[in-house]
Length: 536
Ligand code: GLC
Picture 1: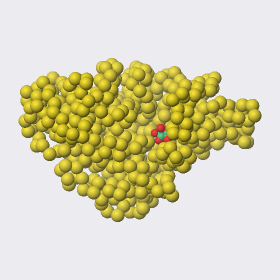
Picture 2 (picture 1 turned 180 degrees about the vertical axis):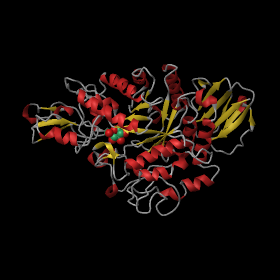
Picture 3 (picture 1 turned 120 degrees about the horizontal axis):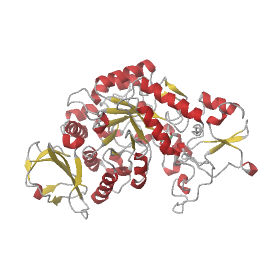
Picture 4 (picture 1 turned 180 degrees about the horizontal axis):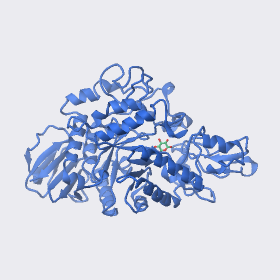
């Protein structure tokens, strides 16, 4: 029997925006439990996912949406409590859904008791749990490192007259992973949640845990365009992140996760292909995969996609699991980036490639970014360096369950505004529509779940490399042979694939009956149309 992560579809829930049951306008764990049947009730009327990843639900002042943890073993009261969490895990498992927690390794909240103690005096036993340095001469920060969220990565602590390091907001001081006590304490955190039944972790901002021990200045980035690019890009982050200790830490975390028969570790990195491979190698027991965000960055062209996927596939060893991501809580929504039709095509791609597909909540409805008025902005990144459009609220708006006053998300005004189109783009309406985005997702996931070719089969690209508009590949195993043919262009395309006969499993438009026979040697695709075919 294959471990679950060889063939599951993973669904990311941003808990603040999934479902509110206690009437405060913010999603909660009871809301997630309530909607588990939507995710997988064992029938084809549900989405059919096999795992869910929860963005942080730890107790937090929520400066960075929970990525500023105040207590690693407590649930934030906005979301519920440990008893409700345990119930969520039980109910998810009962439906065959695995649960992955976010593990925020690099930093804590500045209100975390560890940091309060560390900053209380230079002699505090926890002082070295964080990263402190004397000012450079003239009171300047110790080096030129920048915070991802704007400004220097150092903040001066007036009481103890030293700077502390924060790779993100000043309210998120970086832990010192060179201190063995930190490593030991965080190991306990992982064990705490594994003991409560979680099936793995998504490790947040993993590259930041390893910085240069000599704290050398980062060199300037020659391709930075001052005034146009996010100021964080003005340096090449050679020393402030990505040290080689990352791999040894990953290896240790993999061992912890291995306490669970089929535990999984997914680490958050945003790296080109050339650098993903070394992270795959970190973990001898093949329980780790580094996120592959490359599809969110590639130009929308069949040849770019094909080149990337072919190289990615070729770079992996048989035990390494590929993964693909189209959206998450930090990026503009896929339907906004590509438009509705291309987003449907990208869904077919995501759910027919080899490995683990990650779905961001609401993307299965075709949800789009929401313009958030300035006085309703919640993500501080927006107003700290706002003019670069870095705010992430537009992709974090409430899930659209139905067409009622607050979209069935809440009984009261939600914490972020709803999408204007929510009355037509919602779970209830799309469930009734045989051609909707949601129906496409459900169809593809259920086909995937029951198809040996899509879950364990090989990947082989077809068509010449020079083909710019159509991406075609075969997924094969002894039991079945499938073809995926995707027209990336906005006009009709004709392709010829060397098989005399195939039958339709589904198309992106869901308007050609299943079983209809086509001739792949003369296949005409409408604009942005995709076919999933079975070779007869
Ligand atoms: C990761 C998270 C992001 C968060 C940051 C700092 O990139 O995805 O939401 O702000 O880490 O924790």
